[in-house]
Image (tube, rainbow, N blue to C red):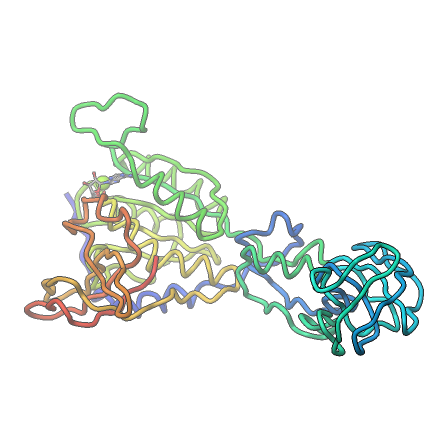
Length: 399
Ligand code: AMP
Ligand code: MG
């Protein structure tokens, strides 16, 4: 039986993250139709080459007029959305106008219909000031404005703004291809019967969903038995097809943990093994020809937490996005015991009005996956003696 000695000292979370990010170079870009770009990351600036709104338009249903005192005016035509009046409005006349329709040349105010006496071919309008109820061209965007920066993750608002400028396609970073490998003789697929000593593989599903959420493309989820040959076959396949390989389990010091030795055999160079983190201590990271390989601990909470802390930032960086997770300060709602040697990632719910309160989700064992349910973030509890007490401020990395 051969035990693998730990040579390097375990790293702090930040040091480990830096080593990961040092290897994550942005992928190439491709054009993506706007309707399929949700969740993608922009790979070039979007610069406006037109103004929005494109023309002076009415903010109301009513009448376009020349501003002035109360008057009784002939209605000489209509400007509807998409159907301009098409002529000049002369002083002393009115044009019926709809919201979003072009304000006719010559008009400089719109009177809302509620403030008029509309008699069909004539209309009585009150005193009106210049510019009333007109949305001027370019009030939202001017030509030359940098509207979206490279590296911006595309959400509904970004897609809407791009479309408002007439962009049908956007240059987006390629989605990193991620291959998952779950190791363990005990694993069964949901839907299959459990053998004695078996458990359902939750990591294959939770990690696949995290991959998807991070904007990456899952190439597949492979199961590997706890043998050197089986692990090698699965890892060789995964390394050949992906930008990022994520393995769960088999990365610890047990006699049936084959991930580290197999990675080395396949030419993956170790960048670290071990993080002063709970849960997630045995996390392993290596690289081969630009392919990033993560060995995540098998315990389901550890796998999800270490994905969040190390893999998700890498997937963001590969797409040219800011890898830093959003952090907030919050006040602990209850005591949390510290760990003398390791920083803890405690799953918390955030709430409270005014002061943000962080409430641990319940028992925090690395096998207690329900502790991830309803979690808004990971409260990072510094290593040390004793406990943090209710009312102490902690940093929370949002999920
Ligand atoms: P390991 O890291 O392989 O030593 O596994 C640590 C713990 O995580 C063990 O209790 C495993 O049964 C469990 N585990 C490993 N892989 C999975 C998985 N895919 N889904 C759920 N639990 C797992
Ligand atoms: Mg195992």
